[in-house]
Image (cartoon, rainbow, N blue to C red):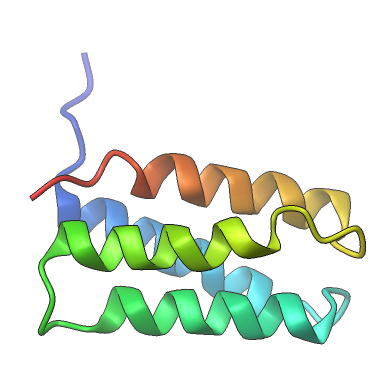
Length: 89
């Protein structure tokens, strides 16, 4: 059985996935901007891991309904949200 990922590992994983969205030229600019904002929240070491994750989820939730989001990006955003929702302080 796999060991559960600790909070920092989950956040690093989410950051890596966000970078793939940010660097994808096929993703609309507003979605890349929101991904960048979420990434910046995750990088904010002044906040606890739970708060950083919650802030990022809030930003990502705001773009999930965007009709211009490519399908593969939509799937990835949902994966990131699912990971971050398991981060607890």
